[in-house]
Structures are given as C-alpha cells and as structure tokens.
Amino acid sequence: MPLLAHYKVDPKRNRLLMVACNTEDMLLPRANFTFYEFDAGFRLVQKMEFVLPAHLMIHDWAFTDSHYVVLGNKIRLDIPGSMLAMTRTHPMIAALALDPGRRTTPVYLLPRSTEAVASGRDWTVPVEAPSQMWSLHVGNTFEEDNGRGGLDLHLHMSGCSYDWFHFHKMFGYNWKNKKLEPSFMNAVKTKEMLPLVLT
Image (tube, rainbow, N blue to C red):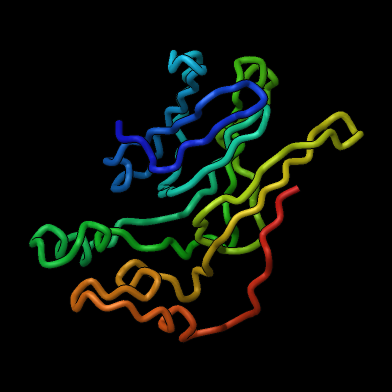
C-alpha cells in the first residue's frame, strides 16, 4: 500500500508514525488505513489496521496519545469524469467528486492501542463536526482530561467549503492550460466560513 506524504513524529514516545491507504479504495465505498510506528532505530514497534465503511479521501491526518485522527473528506465516483479519465484526456482525479450528501464532516477517532480498542467504543462511527468541509492540513492535535472521566480532543486544521471546492480547478490551478488563478477560490461566497474546532 502506498504511504501518505505526511508522516508524524511522536516526541513523547520517540516514534516515527506513518499511514498507508489502498489507492483502489478511491473508487470503492470503503477506506483501508494501516498505521505504522517505528522506534529511533527504525524498527517497527506497532502496526494497526482499520477498514472504514465510507468513501473517503485524505491528504493529512493527526494523532494524540491515544488516537489516530482521520478527517473524512467525503467523495463519490463521478461517472462522466471517470469516462474522461479512462480516455486519458483528463487526470484520474476527474473520476472523483465531492459528496454533498452530508452537511457535516466525519472525524474518525481510531484507537492507537489494543487497550483503546478493548474500551468498547465503536471507532467506525465518526464524530460529526458541524460544517461541510474538505480538510487539507493539520496544524496541531492534542488531548486533555476533561474531568468527567473522559478526554477532550483538540484539533487545529485548515479546510475548504464544499460549496465551491471541486477537483477540476483545484486551488485555482487549471490543468488544461497549466495556469494558476487562485482568485477562482474566492469566486463564490455563500456563507461565512466558521473555524472547525473539535472538543
């Protein structure tokens, strides 16, 4: 399985963290993720595998002491776009489209240890963040004891609104004429963008 571009370093445990996902899952309603943790000698010390029953595409991810955090960018197969991609007149990304069917953003909290798996929480059920967003990069993630016998997870990330984000002119880049026009991203403003804070 190919590794995602973003790896992480856990300074508390002195570990290098990486995640791989099946590329063929982009066309199927499931998502397979394998998380790897290596020690300072690059020896594999932990491997955790998860299959999520959702059509997701991720670029970046996060972790805390007890969880891997995956922001669920919801996608669907675009039939006309996939036909164009098969003719090689369009890039493969044209076979995908954002899934506007949900007005929230699923955030998957995947257990980082077998003890967390045994806790009984169903990790296949996401926390629903109250905005329809496409997540880009994670800035910081951490957890705190909430004083009620649980944890609050804090997540800082950047994202785009589903209302005007699509793959054919990603971030204003037109692949046909190879020109970048970032003002495209500001062409439509239908509502004020709110920060996404998960606690």
